[in-house]
Amino acid sequence: MIKHFIGAVAVILSLSACQTTSNIEPEYNIIGEWRVDSVQSNTVTDYSSAKLIFAENGKLTGNTSCNGFFGQYQITGKQLTLTSDGLTRKACIEALMQQEQQVLQTLPLVNQIQMINKQLHLLDQSGNTIMVLTGVASTK
Image (cartoon, rainbow, N blue to C red; front, top):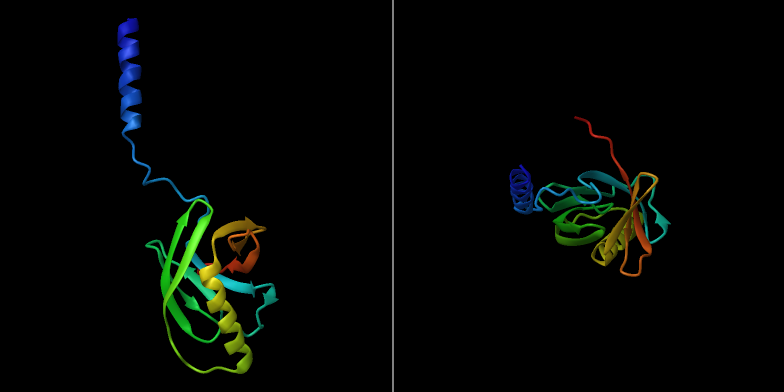
């Protein structure tokens, strides 16, 4: 009887050891659209359309305040890296163009994330908040 019990436990343990970790959810679910509230401690203008959209496949799209952009992101636990691969080039009013430059300069500095009061804080390598985002409710 004990041999059967030990054998059953061994089989269960060996099967559980075969599981892959590909189904593990990231610590933070950032999939979806996020409105940019502040960049480098500067609140964005009221009429700004700055946003980041994280897709499930690692694709990043959004708006830098003036132009649309696309790129990639990679998340592992709290670590986050963003790359911008392309950008439209239209002119906007000066305030939005300056804000756009801040967004573009800040994106490659992102190193980690933290969720505080339902806001996504993007942090630099030193742990300083460099961008604050608020989730946009789905219209689906």
